[in-house]
Length: 197
Ligand code: ITT
Image (cartoon, rainbow, N blue to C red; front, side, top):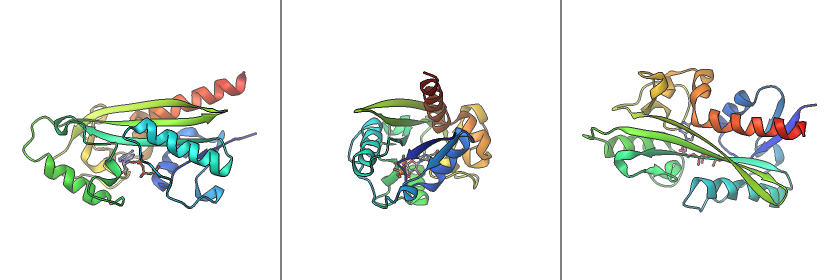
């Protein structure tokens, strides 16, 4: 029988990626599927803190064990910005075009363009939470390129696929090397070992 996993996200792209990475052995449900329509608070100043906050909110209010992913783009020349504030870098809301425009403006003239994406996934388990991590290193381009993916994908060129940006790669190729792909595969490995125990 398929194992059901509830993912605490309102981001349809994220859910689609997690479904593709998890494969057909898992039934992945999003917040809409469990009747949760609120914007779950993310008030921590760390990715782990926000992932834990989202996962435990669903467990406490809806009773499901749950996973939540929090992701940030850390840019070396900007002291790690936008980091945990990636979703609202250009102000409240989730406008990726505005976030990327501000990032490129702040990177104008910078020769050090190193950056990485980090994903932390929190899994509720009994009274506690278990964390899984994934990271991909790369550089920030001078202009957006490509139309696939979401968020900052058009301005991030992963080392392992250069000169392509994430937005110039198909979903399977992105998932094979991405922060979310790595963190989700670590989660799946844990879950499949746990179900063998
Ligand atoms: P949820 O909190 O509902 O899961 P969100 O879009 O707010 O959705 P995050 O806080 O994890 O998700 O994401 C922070 C920002 O980073 C947001 O602007 C995303 O668009 C961006 N982002 C996340 N994953 C990304 C990826 O794989 N590629 C490019 N940008 C990404």
